[in-house]
Image 1 (cartoon, rainbow, N blue to C red):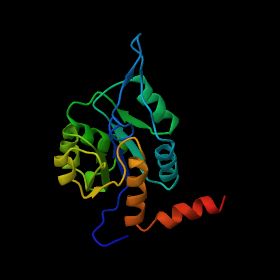
Image 2 (image 1 turned 180 degrees about the vertical axis):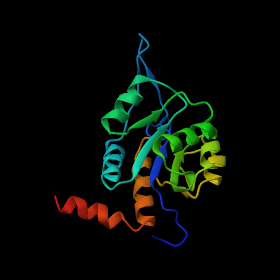
Image 3 (image 1 turned 90 degrees about the vertical axis):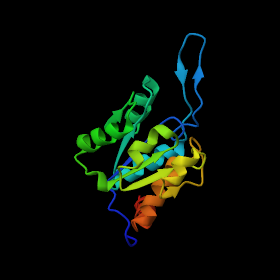
Image 4 (image 1 turned 30 degrees about the vertical axis):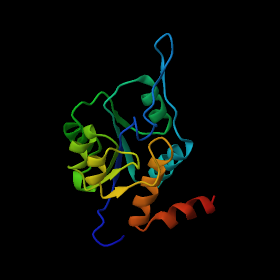
Length: 172
């Protein structure tokens, strides 16, 4: 682990603008769909295999988010959260992991209350400027286009565990 890097045990992600590009496709009958990046999903599954948990904290509530996150094996998805400061404390409680062991990836102003409470705040490349200013890391990729995977890889690299991830798949 690199000097002064926190011992991260839980990564928490926003959804719109982080897991997705923030676009919402709404059909004529009111069905909402989103596009997710498969590499982001692979990263989530891989890091969970390494013993680091993943949680979701999103301001919107819709079925496709819970379906996708269930598919990825994420046990706690907090949807419809308008106060992400309270939401991150709820996620911390649900997992039994203290805030000083949590990293958070966000993109918009609503994410700031959560980002300021965790050990390692991160922002996607196309985040709002105040969000980037409060981040310890800004991904090289925009939301919905590999930002989640970028953040996962970054945390593993900072913890000195990225090579362990690679080896896990070489040994299969």
